[in-house]
Image (cartoon, rainbow, N blue to C red):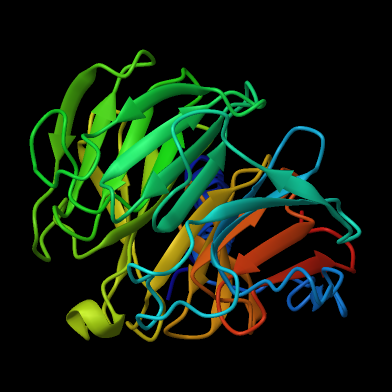
Amino acid sequence: MRNHQASPGSATRRRHWLFALAVSTAMLAGSHTKLSSAANSYRLVDAWPEVRPDLPMGFVSWADLDSQGTLLVFRRCPIKCSDGTHPAGGDPPGNVLLFDRAGRYLREWEPKSGGKAKEAHGLRVDRHGSIWTTDVQMHTVKKYAPDGTLLMTLGTSGVPGDGRDTFNKPTNVLVAADDTIFVTDGYGNQRVVKFDRNGNFVKAWGRKGTGPGDFRIPHGIAQDRSGRIIVADRCGLAETRCTDGRIQVFDANGAYLADWTAPNHTLAPQAVAVDADDHLYVDDTQNAKTWILDAKRLTVLETVEGASGHGMTISSSGDDIYVTGGSTGIRRYTRSATPRH
């Protein structure tokens, strides 16, 4: 019986194979859904914002932060909307309330022209400080200067439609890094509409359905650091009663790239946001939590239990999460542990 000794070449090949196996194993481990050591590192800030008897929060639809850290709160109704969660004819128009980070009320922001929203829904502050609002009942998206001067109107006021200059109950708006405008035309049309920075129609994509690029209530929209467009395809709740919502990812021209849903295959994503570290935040009312994912890989990094509502915004660092809707109007969750790496 002879002893077989490995040749120098085969030994080298074995070392290379072991090294490749180690690298592959490490990459595979990193790709799995795994909570970080900072999981559950957020806490709900008590007694925030300040409670004032002359300023009931009522139903808050959405909120966003400006570059100074001021929080703009888009209030739909001051106490309770008379038609379920939506305003009826006798309800006052929506308004925008300003708070500092400590939760102190500053003042009301009011349009100088263009009027207030009949049904407040989405609100966005772009990198230039312009304030964008979506009005579901009036089928419009409006852009205001910080002083309240109306700068642009997308859609035709009071006229629903699916054309180049009409929406049917638009839900939200995104101003991309190059100032391109994306509108989730969500409750009626099930599509995303793209405009150039001057408000000229570029294209639209989507239809009602469950296939790649189809929608069942596109409700929130964000952009990651590589320029991809991320849409919260909400599904769920009274409109459809489905539970299989999803996150869909597109390139800037509307080409479908990927999607994500929760590990239990149920999801109702109301809103999405991306922080400076390219972490994706998903406000999920189906599972009553906010999911925090790696935006590029769509893998779960962390969850924030109880943090869910109708809308959401975050600080650029991701240290603060603001969730709107529900009986409390708006809640702030802040990170109290070592940040994720």
